[in-house]
Image (cartoon, rainbow, N blue to C red; front, side):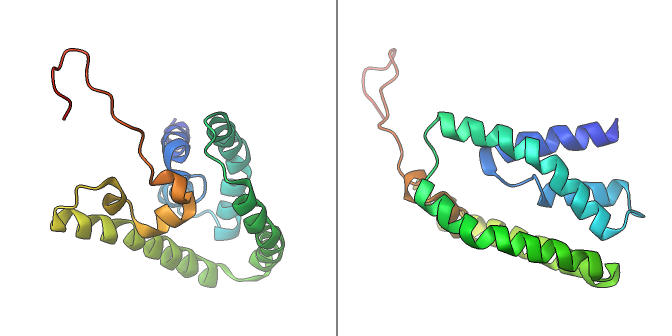
Length: 159
């Protein structure tokens, strides 16, 4: 049942953020299954990510939130990188993989939290100031645009 809850949390997080299919799931599985070898943990997280990310992809396609040129460029480098990385992970000892995964997840966490906290401390009110730069870059310029606000039907003046 605990593993199902991990899946629910991962699915909830991956839809709106694209974070979770790997990083959140790996971290949570490691807490629940500490004796699982890192390469098995990574392999398990990758296999479950296929349907999870596939479902999130369909949602983003339906809402027109995909930049195909950027996607193609990332795939040109990403697919060979995944193949080489997968082959290496089978040969690299767990004592090397686990600290590397921990360092990577920690760096991602800091990069997402630190800019948001700095904008909040500055009193940043613009939406683009509250979104970490790494996330803005990954989502592209369309993510920064906000739709025009319509006044609430019951209000006389719009904010």
